Length: 545
Image 1: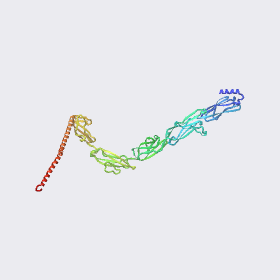
Image 2: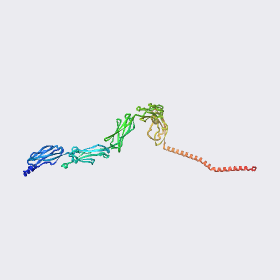
Image 3: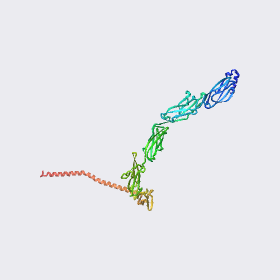
Image 4: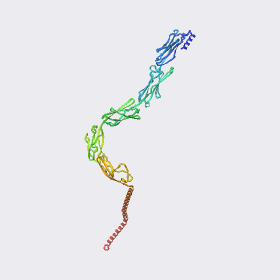
């Protein structure tokens, strides 16, 4: 400002007569670009050597912060809109003015992107909308919509009428499957370089578009009949759905929530669950399927019944031989109505609601005998069958039979041998064998020696009694065994020889007889001819001829 005042003083000295008429008014800065809400310092000056009234005219809040003989400086605060400031000076009664245009700008700090709706069905249209609140000047703004890195649309605001301008852009797009999970964003650019300002950039948050297809209702797979307390598998399936792996299933049996296991393949998703019905009667299995904003629900009626297996009882669990045993079959108390019963071996069917029974006299061969009872019940037009089986165990005294415990046993010396004696009896008898008062180990094989030759006394015992048997064991040496084998071979060979000679002798007379047969036939022919000649001679005797 000191230099400016010096320049004005020299002008007055050189041209003192024309100064009043040729004075100038100037303002600094010559153009003003101010961010919204900020302040600006404005300097007004003149070439008049002795200026009169001076100042600035503006509706903005102003404060004079400095002055000199030919200048004044003002602070403008809280600039919120565009305005024109007038700087004026009077010189010798003449007033001159200088205007200063103040432009307010507001960078695009908040860029807001909207996807409407966020989930879109395939082939449906969706809107991508972007707007920037509190941005100025709009004629310097450019908004660009992006899908990933690909530009979808660009909008400038230069040619639009100022009265209808809003910093927003919107386009409509038709959804395709490949658009699922695509990123959308909006980029705002405010270019103030033509006004001496800078270049401002800002972008919206990225939004992800979801595409779905859900055109078919789900289907439930469940048996129309469920047995109370029994585990049953149920399924819910939905086809032509995308993306199938994001489908959610909610399954209920009445008020009982199930825990399904979800699976998917291609465009099909399904849920498998195990259900245990807690109450009998008519109920409803429901399946709610949701994907994004869409839900579909389907229901299937089921009937829950109670049909436990029939109760099969044996009067005495472990009867002895000869004991009469009553076997009874009855329907379970939780079965309603009463089932039809059929007891194996019973001659007649019982009356409805009555048990089936059979009386058996226990025999030894009945031990391990199986009895079964079949109950049938009609539920909702279907015939259901349950079967219960039970086994009869008959107690009898131990026995040592020859088939399981031979009285004579031959061992070969040097081989591994065990005393072969298996008792019969129920309960299973314990077995003890002794020789010369010493207990013989029946469980471990022993190498046979001559010392094992002798008689063993074996005793089998159970709760019903005991039985004993003597077993004679002979241990043969290897030479004896070989001699026995050779003897047997010789006997067999002699037998074969005798049979061969007998057959030969029987065959040879037949052969000789066949050889003599033609000769005998010739002799017989000659005798017949001789007899014929004699008869002819007698007929031709002299007194007959």
